[in-house]
Image 1 (spheres, rainbow, N blue to C red):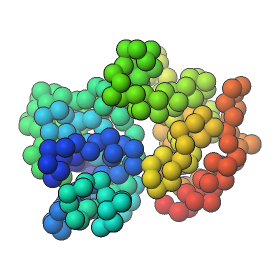
Image 2 (cartoon, rainbow, N blue to C red):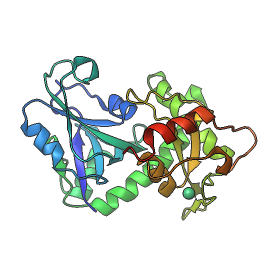
Image 3 (cartoon, rainbow, N blue to C red):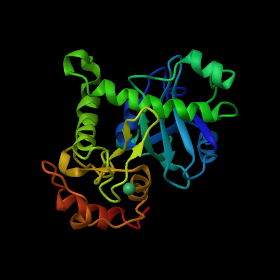
Length: 259
Ligand SMILES: [Zn+2]
């Protein structure tokens, strides 16, 4: 498995933009062209870890495109201070913002924390991937706690993610396409919430139950990558969760066979 650290704040005056990366499903480097080449080292479907200086890994994802895109339009840029930005599309499948893989753990697993804006993980990949799988489940549990126990600074994330958790609960973590659910070592079940019309500025989908399906990881990747056509009639249904036909239509028109 090839895995890369991506530093979210090495070139942005100490400000972290990781929330923006999650919301827009992107990874960014900025500045001279060498930062484009660094980002271009990562291949499609390779794993990337979102690293914040002095904090640790706050997310893990899969690169969805073939190469970086140069972004010069200010409205589409993440940083207000750089003239040139390079973007990659990423499915940030593991959100560890509430339970980051910390500096001590990174040093223990990888020998040292990453030092560059883009850096290949040379040691500890397997252990890291186990940690972000587990961290994602831990975050999901934290997010489903009563709102009073969650800091107001993460309320947007709670609202977004709670909807996906609700959909997974309604379906007992069974994939709405194949009916399969993954049973973990502790007996709990694992599935993923997929926004049919994706969130973020590119697609601008809403975070509502009718735009979310409960999927196994295989079908989640197949939908993200536009590998399958969706049909509402063929999706497994439960009471209290109706999928919007407009979102199915959006997927079939705009995402199916377009990635
Ligand atoms: Zn499935």
